[in-house]
Length: 389
Image (cartoon, rainbow, N blue to C red):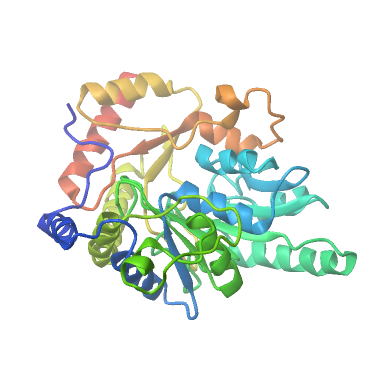
């Protein structure tokens, strides 16, 4: 159907062989492959010490992060207004109130540090930030704000506001040399099919706090003190349950995929960067669109997606259909929360920039095995569709 689709897996025989080897081993539930994946992912992040807990999805990591923060009924959690619905879903599932913060600007679509500071109250329990499209947030300003507020709260006997990085778009991205997912209290990664590191489903919970890591490991597996593998290996006879927990485990097949994908990730991110530069060159003079994230010193992107901003008078749905007629798949990152049935009655905070971007954003195809010729085909189709519209 598609001449150039939105995303294509960067898989080959290495992934096939890794899964086949795991199946032949006779052990497929969480075990030694998962532990190896956690260790090597921690090494990739290059922060010492760092604790990595592999989980079944990025959403599972976010849910666990909020549980670790203590967020619940009566609390507030600040999240970006421009993000995937998982961020608001986990807040609501914990019983807390989501408070939306606006984008920084039309140039930097990441969460605004100024709006974060404006929306902190005595009830704020956590702040979730998202490194949108793989571009790091302004971490120094965000951390300075939270450090100042937390010093004040300590004197008042209020709980610390936890900083949670949703790094679903940003494995390998860095801010002033520090990898995304390592700068907050907790980092959450997604390994969904279309992510830079793709397992189909999967995620990683990352922290430097050994106590938080221990809590995450209990939450991941029913609150149990030993795993099935421990009993299989004769390291334990039974188990205790320390706290109520969930089943957010990763299986060994996906851990095996993760080990291969992790090896490919640096080169994959470089390929994405080259393609983004091609896109920018091809589209720099197109008056009907704006390109965000053009000049952000000190920020190294993972180039997860390539978003553009359409002019106000362009009908986005018509444009998407026109691209489809030419075999080009496009998408939207992301619809506004208030457009969803589940959140129509939710009191949405004033976030004018994010609301406007949500109405005009369009995502073009981007994946590591794409070629410069593919980019040219997409750009010509886009220009044709804009002239037609």
